Image (cartoon, rainbow, N blue to C red; front, side, top):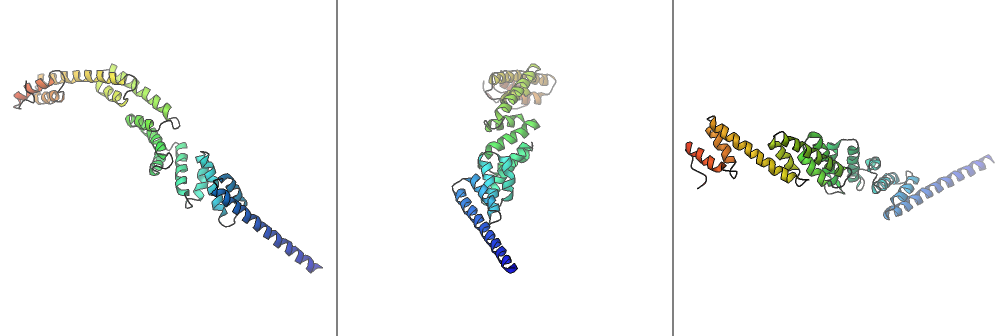
Length: 261
């Protein structure tokens, strides 16, 4: 009787193990079919039920990552792709998600490097422009920041940051103009392109700046710096009679005229 009981118990265990194996295999096979159809959430659930059957853990992590990736939950997807970087397109998807993690942490230079390396993958170029613009804005490189925020389009808060930066640069340019620093104001208005009345402001600054340079050239000449006056008048060719003044002073220096009256 005792021996018979043990045999019955062993049979039950074998049947249970067999059933468990059959269930894992079925879950695995069904998940492979779901994966092939692009039903990644269903596939992930099935592969997780299949436990350690064949390469179910790898497929489970990859499928779960794809599910989150397709939902735009890149930060949540990163740890899943980190497990399967050598599987299918795991490495590329991991890098993209990792870039999103870096961005969320404020590591914009590192994020920019990651997205730049991804080339044309997904919208990596857009994310590169956004993150590099954040770096440029922080470092005071406003000219490049303005351009790169434009390239980032409507990603994240790029439009708001672009508008705010334009306003700040414009206000600073106006202040510099009022203070008489026409050269620097001209540079800033030039950065802004067609923003508001920047082209008109730039022309005014250019005129004032040339007035200043012309007066400076005359001062140099009066102080005896004939060579300096000549070079400055020469750089102003096309403004007022600067070309004529350059020729007049050039004759004193033994230089042939650059224009014929």
